[in-house]
Amino acid sequence: MSTGTERNRTEAENVTGTGLEAPATTPAVLRRKGTLPRWAMPALLAGCAVVTAGAVAAIGFSIGLWLFLTVVVYAVATLLVSRAVEGGRRAADRVVTVIVTSAFLLAMIPLASVLWTVVSTGWARFDVQFFTNSMRGVVGEGGGALHAIQGTLIITALAAVMSIPVGVLTAIYLVEYGHGGRLARAITFFVDVMTGIPSIVAGLFAYALFALLLGPGVRFGFVGAVALTVLMIPIVVRATEEMLKIVPNELREASFALGVPKWRTILKVVIPTTAGGIATGITLAIARVIGETAPLLVTVGLATGVNLNPFDGRMATLPVFSYYSYAVPGVPREPFIDRAWTAALVLMVIVMVLNIIARLISRYFAPKTR
Image (cartoon, rainbow, N blue to C red):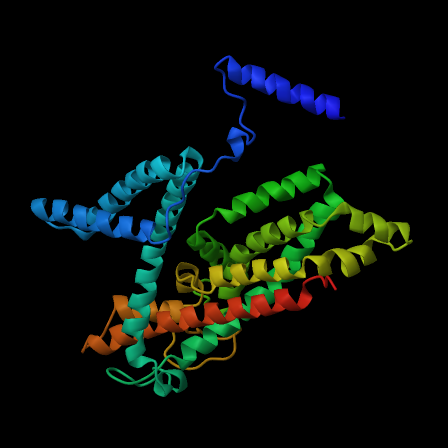
């Protein structure tokens, strides 16, 4: 052992004596360059914002142009500064972070703008009277949307009752029984077609169907529920199908190995495993149709009073109520506009409540890991 050590030492001395340096004991991969402090990037962003603000002010200040130039200059400055101090890999990571963050903020601008506009404008009539009164006998100020809220909930509930079982069972057939057969391919094709149809087409289909059965001019809540069902079914099928596909086949095979029949495996193993995702898909489908206006204009019409019977007479819904209040206001105009914005705000609140319920269902039915 000592002989080997002495030999290595002698070779190192010989290399040194020839004017060549011995190899470094630490590989180059492990050498680290400097690291920017935490305050460097915010300070760099502030500096870029000040510089671009001065440049934009010289040609006529514009907020949109200023923000765009700030992001571009900040990305370039980040690349140069980080590359000089931290190296190329860290610089590329920081530039990609800047681009992704900017894209996210750009996508959030219209959403935040719509949310702020609806809340700030609709809050004026978000009172008790709006939720307890209808528009029967009201021609100016006052009144409410009780009849529209009730009509929206009744029609959407009917559509959900009809579309959820059909959509879920169709998805189960496609994943568990179809196996790419001719019928499964045909169903998948028609589901894709139904996903892209305009909502007015669904309304015209429902109206034409009931006009053939009951005569022309028919309008009541159930016709609108059928139109919404046509729009909901493909969304429920797609969401449920994707959730069922991610269930590992090992779970099904383990159930089959214990002698459990296929229908019971689907009912007790597959569906509980994906119940959270299925509930989220159903909620998205409901949120998709609850604000539809065109099909309900054709099939349900407009009413000023409360009607809780979806099989007799016209019913009011929040989308149609908001549309007519804004498009055909009375005199004075302001009360109608206020009611239209408040109806839009109530729709947003309903969708938010549905999303909260979906999250609670997802958490409750999620597979227990402990």
